Each structure stands twice: as C-alpha cells, then as structure tokens.
Length: 196
Image 1 (cartoon, rainbow, N blue to C red):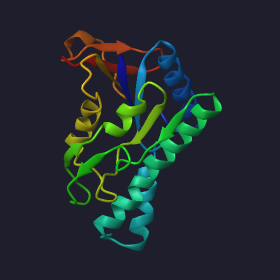
Image 2: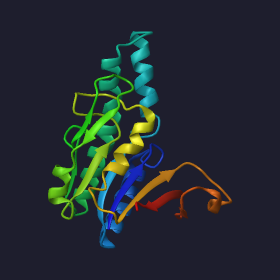
Image 3: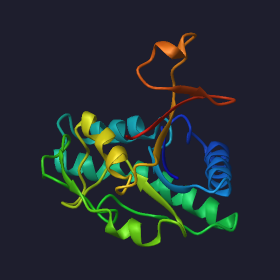
Image 4: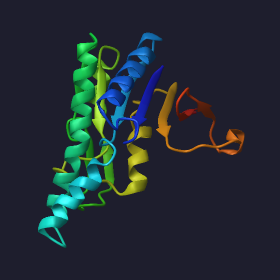
C-alpha cells in the first residue's frame, strides 16, 4: 500500500522529534508499505522568518517572502532525509518543483495547476520521497491553504489502495463523530483514510 504521511511543525519541532519521525517512517516501510512523506517547517521557524523579514520591511515583497518561508520546509525535509539515510534507508528530499508540483505564479497564495507524479512513480518502492509543503514549478511560492491538501491527495499516483496519514494537534473524545476515520497513535492523533 502507498501511504502519504504529512508531519506538521510540532511533529518535527526539534532534532529529537525529527529522529522520531524517521523511526516512524522506517517502521511503516518495514511493514511493507511504500511511502511519500510531506513535512512542514520545524515549529516556530516560520514565525521566526516572518519576524526577520519584518525587521527590515513592514511590507516585504511577496516573492521574497515565499523564497524565505520555503526555506523552513526545505531544512526539515533535508534533515529527515539525512536521518533516514543514516538509518540505512534510501531517501531523497525534493523541492516542490522536483516533485512535479506545478502552480500559478501568485505569490503567498499560489494554486496548484497540476501534479506530475512520474518522477516518484519510477522509484516509489525503492526510496522515501520527502517533500516540503511549500514551493512549486514556478520558483518558490506558498500555497493557498486549501490547496496543500490537494498535494497530499494527488500523490497517490493512481493507486486506489492509498492511505493519507497526518499528525494533528487535535484531541477529541468522540473520534467517531469526525467525518473520516480517526486512529490514535501513542503520543499524538492521526487521520487515516482510504481513497475509493
């Protein structure tokens, strides 16, 4: 089964958490699954970068902001790839462009035009693909929020045996009330469902 895992900033908030994510990813692979991993910037990093930009300008250029903010995700994906390689796994960190994500060129709220999954299809069973939540074909852009979900769903590569897994910062005592199946992991909550 192909599983797309998305880890938010809290889940990759420091080096120890990135190492824990690497172990979780490796464990999921050991269970016989193929994986694509989508990561956010480490917790607090995006806000720090925004603060840096506002030190120099009250109204920074949207293009430069996109370039700046995409750096956080690239750092996380590279660190996770390094951790996985050190554990003996083949992993590669890709930018959005390298992963085949094509968007319009509207800075700070780009919309996805298409996703070409041919790069990942070629080696999906042999390596882990680590993709940042920002960036696209047209240089560096940040996605219009609802479109980040489209990235994850489009990465199933035509495989209808697909699970999407996201570590969330939510807690609920009535998981059955949510629209999708909720599974509880030991330290956090995860959303998991199958495309039909």
